[in-house]
Length: 364
Image (cartoon, rainbow, N blue to C red; front, top):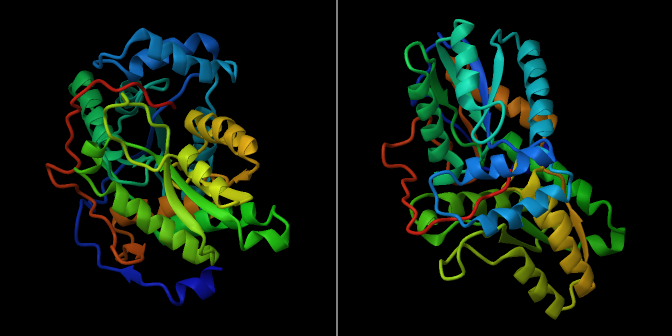
């Protein structure tokens, strides 16, 4: 698909004029959300997620049920281990001699522990790849705050960490999502594919948070580009995993509401493509594979979930390209569509958000 589609897409290759391209980087760190590995981890993990927020214990117990349905193990850590291994191989093939570390926001290996390991290994300046493609407080700014907090707690000798740009419109990210969508569509009988509806799914956030960032516009761009790449016209951007109080407005429509609407017009096949996530974790395997699947079945709809990009070769190659940008090894900054590549360095007030009410946890 790539040759024919990209021939008509707007491929922007702009000179690398923003951000730090200092060649003295000595390491790479994969930064992610984290998740429990066994039942005993679930409540401590959830308590880490909500630390500083006034979330009632009953809500934590409700969320714990989702994890315990899978014996307390989130798939996110294993998927990050697979991504870590694939990225190391990709960098080795490209002769980029940088060790790759891994640190999480909410569970082992914790960011502070990883930064301590890096310091003890003599590392002083690292490139961070954060497992979030989009700009928002929880998907970008909070990770930068977490990194800085870990550095402050570690103290003298803590390595400097520079985060790579968001990549929602990088051609390789689009390519990987197109491949996943096409593979899901191909599971349907040929005569039903054209009429199937595609629901591009992403994590909902409060409207107040969405107002401080480009999250919605970026998701809409990614959905449009993936739909164009797959040549599929029947699609809708939807949201999932809402976790706030009922009186606080969050982005919609919710995936379950969307399924209700499709059932009213007698749609029989739906592909859910979770473009808002790069890997399977609890919000994918529970909210989509369990709740949405059950809801669709009750409505008489056949629901197929497309894979996340995971370790798709194009996606892993994209991470390597973003690292090469920061190392000054390339003068191009790739992006498809209308918005162009995101800056390397966010403005000081980018995605600032102060929750007005306490929020229950998002799952890892």
